[in-house]
Length: 306
Image (cartoon, rainbow, N blue to C red; front, side, top):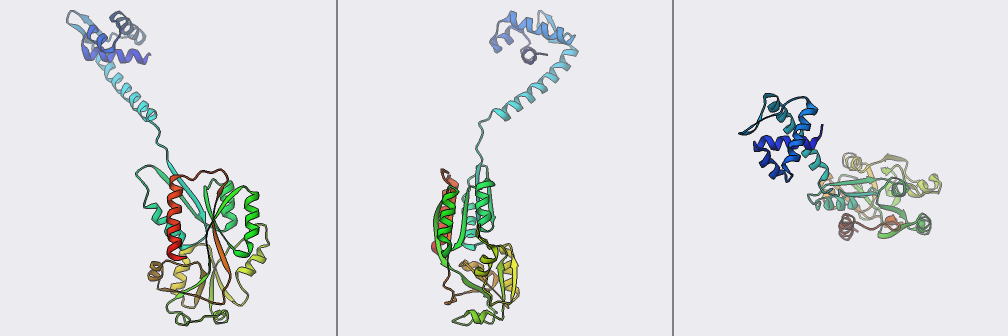
């Protein structure tokens, strides 16, 4: 059955006249008449009674026209669905260290999204997996964190893998603990002061291609006998808040988190180890509008806390 002929029949039924329908369809009347006859022959029914009064629907014709209208409406819906100009979906993806100043920047950045369709992906992990996410898992941006003494190693490795890198900031870890912690009011905290207490640490410090045991030993000094290892940030705040014998080495935390969980941030002068947070993306990648908006929020968070 010819869909065009079906459309012609619906127009003839609407106009009640071959002549008027032909004018509306911008085709010659003989061609329209022939198309209607071919449709009727193909279906084996008479759709119209021809008379001096015009084209009148037969009972079978009325039934057919109802089906034809429904079919043509569905065809229009399908065409409209797939012929609309495709609206590109905004996409943002980043793999980062577990850092509160970065997550705050991401939260503020998310408030800037327009009504346009968008998908955002935010993954917290270690430096090795961030680099892997960038190269293998279609993440567009990454932030890696490493100790200053590994700087040349990381630069060489990123150059080899054709990754662009830009330093965001450098800092020394501070101590985070409950306001009720026995050391919370102490002015000058030493490594020896921390020995009796429980350290909370992320379980996967890692530098690619270096022995994990070597990195863990450097990141987690041997003077602490009790540790709780975690993989995500949410539990660390609950632990620090509920267990007043715990502490954690951490990059600076926003004041509102300290207030929310009843925590304090302390400086340990003995801790001279410097860390760097570095933004990475593949060579040749052009930063999108979303990427640039996030980086702006990241820089503002860095100025506030670091």
